[in-house]
Image (cartoon, rainbow, N blue to C red):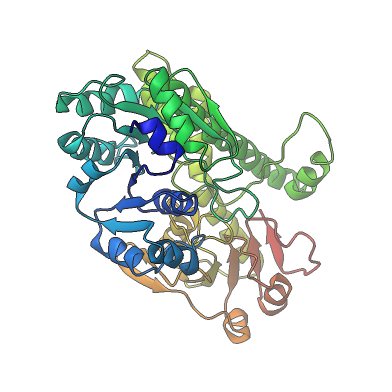
Length: 431
C-alpha cells in the first residue's frame, strides 16, 4: 500500500520529533483524527509524562492526552531510531538565536542527521520549525540525501510553518489554514493530503522557500507594527497625551487599519527571533533589511524605556528606585499562557534589580523563574503584599487579575499593557 492510500485510510503512522509547544498539540490533533502517533523527544522526562497522560503544556489537557494514550493512538519515546517505523516525520524542534543573534539551526541539523540514519523509501518528512527561507532545501535536503535516497524519488520532503497562537480560544490547528510547500509536486500533494486530515483549509505554494518566507513575514509584520506603536507611545508620553486613547480612536476606522498595542517588549519563540533569521539570510544576497532590523531594535529597547518610566513615576511620588519594593505582575510573554520564552518581563525584572530595586513577581501560570543566578518564586497576591509595595508593574495582562482590587490596594501602579485604562484611580501611570 503506498503512502497516499495509508494517509487516506489513516493507517499511516505519524512521527513527531519534539514534543514541545508545537509538537505535542500536533500529536494530539493527529491522534484525535484517528492516526497512530509516535512522539520523539530528547528529554526522557517529557516522554514519561506523555506516556502517563500528564500534560506540561497549558492548552493540552490531561484528559485529551490520557485519551490518546488509552486508545493506543499516542506513544512517546527518546529512541530516535524508531523513526524508521513511521510513514511521515514532522520536525518540530526549537530554532533559537546564538549569542550574536545569528540563526542557530543546530537542532534542525541534529534531527535531520538522525532521520538520515534511518530514512527508508516512501517516507514523507515535513519541517515545521520556524526558520529562514532556504533551510529545507539548503540544510535539511543534503543531510537527508546522505542516506543514499533521493528526494521526490525515494522519499518526500516539504515545509509547513506552525501557526499556533498559545492562549487563543478561537483558532486552533483545525480552523487555522495550513501553508504547505514541497520540494516537488508529489511532496506537496502528500503533505497537503496529510494536513487535510487535520485542517479545514490547506494552502499549497510552489516551493518550500515560499512557505518559509510566509512564516517569517507573518511574524515580521507583527514585529514592525508593534515597534510602530511602541515608538508612538514614547512620543505620546513626551506630548502628554494617551497612546491608549489614540489607539481606541483609530480602531474605530472600519478600513485600512489594524490595531496593534504597545507593551514592555515582545516575547515568544517567533516574533523576537524571526527578524534576525530573515536579516541573516538577506545578507547572502547583499541586501540589508534596515526597516525590519530597526523595528526589532525598538522592541528590544522597550524594557529599558519602561525601567526609566518606572523610575520617573517613583521619583514623582517622592521615592527612589534604589531599594524600592517593586512587584511585577506577569512574567509570561503574553496573557493567559504559561510560556516565558523571550518574555520581556524577565529582562524588565533584571534591569530593575540592577538599579537596586527589591523585585518580586506574581504569575498564576509560572511558579518560579531564574533571574541571573537567583530563583524567584511567584509570591501570593494578598492585600497586605500589594499595599506593602512601592510600585506594582503590570507587565502581562492576565485575565486572572482583579485590576480594580490591585489599583485600590497598591500605592503606585505602572501599567505597560493599558489594561487599567477604564479605571479612575489616581495612582496609575500608564505607558
